[in-house]
Length: 401
Image: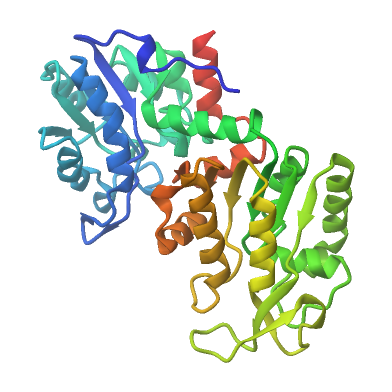
């Protein structure tokens, strides 16, 4: 389990605190279209200003490639960030280092908030350049990393700067690490994982790590088709990585050695094309028509998943169980999501989910708030599940020693 200091371990009264947030939010025509990350980031900022700190917020936005791109400015974030802080004014500096940043920082008073311009306007950010990190560190006395979603990158604002100032985790970072540690490192057993999505080849490290930790691995989506193919089951025209059959067999053999049970679909919803409103059929998995594709799990599989999860105490979920973006092939994922939500709300399951498609599927099912924790971290969430060391987290651990 990660060991790090938090906001509870530092006195910030009258201090200038640098907060690395992730404000890389969806935007259209210069306006923020989804404030989820801003709202989550505001919790830490609010806690700091309530304690009398002045807060300097750091973030990246999009991929400007180390140069100034006006369309990738963080300026449009000022208004929604202020709204998330109950209307508290948020100042803005049109650079994150140099004279503009220095003047804005000098004007700060206790309880005030300043947002600096896009970190990635400078090449030194993604290069993890020590000089750029020192320039950022000059704006604060304490560093708070609240951007778990960027913790898998060794950048100046996530790694190098944590070695220059007293460094702690913000509330969002703390919540992410707490729930992931409880799910993977110290889970209540039996512990299960749902892994879906299109390709096994992109999740080999994930599967290898999970079979060593899980009691039950539920595989869905296109990945399940590859497992079925490797098991000698005809899957018709279904999406699958047939050239991964040998590697898939190795994963199944390793799971058997580790005592991890793999649950694959026993029935499926099939169709000739992936499109809304097409004619579908539900068939046993052994009799998939040669001219059709598996596009969702069937009701018997849903029942089996629910029966097995009913005995579990912890669940990690990454990836949908079918082509959920296209009805009616969302039914399996929706049904399992609702079951997981009910179990969680009944305090019978600790559920942690993450990954872009997973978050979208849970939102579609209307159960995002009913799970124990839903991570918006994307790549960092996946790398944590893969058992990799995240540079931003390691820097916080090192700072706590």
